[in-house]
Image 1 (cartoon, rainbow, N blue to C red):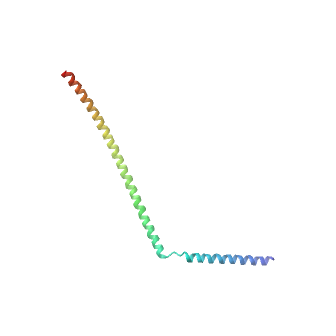
Image 2: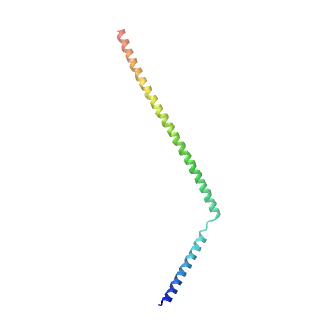
Image 3: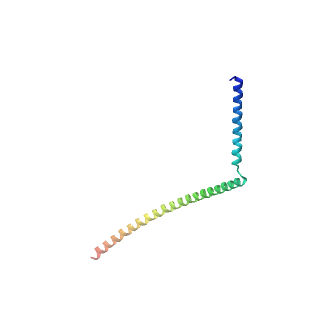
Length: 107
């Protein structure tokens, strides 16, 4: 096969490949069209998802603030409990001392 014939055959093969690719693309686009109703539905779903994410972020921020508040209140309550327990222990010791004093002086 001469050089000119080889170039002609390769050109024909490339044109055929291009034509088949173009036809395949055209068929693919024809069967996979996106309707305007689908686009509107996708837009609606995207906006609903965005609103849900904002609501989630607000809920997370609220819960984090509430957790911080409750943690602070818990620490304060524990400190008050500790102080009350120390006061109760001191009162019990004083009562015991008074009982011992009364028992010693009345006996």
